[in-house]
Length: 62
Image (cartoon, rainbow, N blue to C red; front, side, top):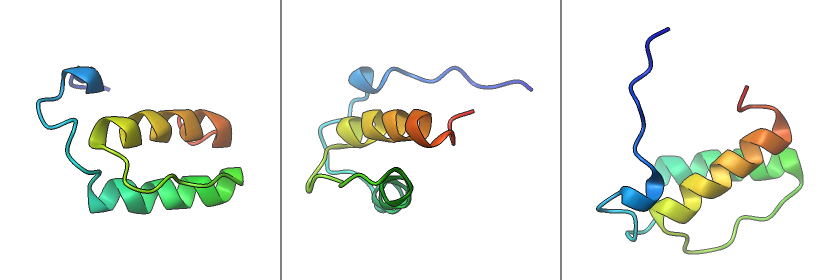
């Protein structure tokens, strides 16, 4: 499988903008599975980092 290299979220020019709707939706799904709470008003970068953490915790990142 050929994956496009991803930019580090810290390098995103829009990383300080509020998280997107899809990020919020997926975070809520992952958080529910992991028994975690999603903090309000995350930035795109923070949401991306939390998604990575919760994917590891739930096994969805494999």
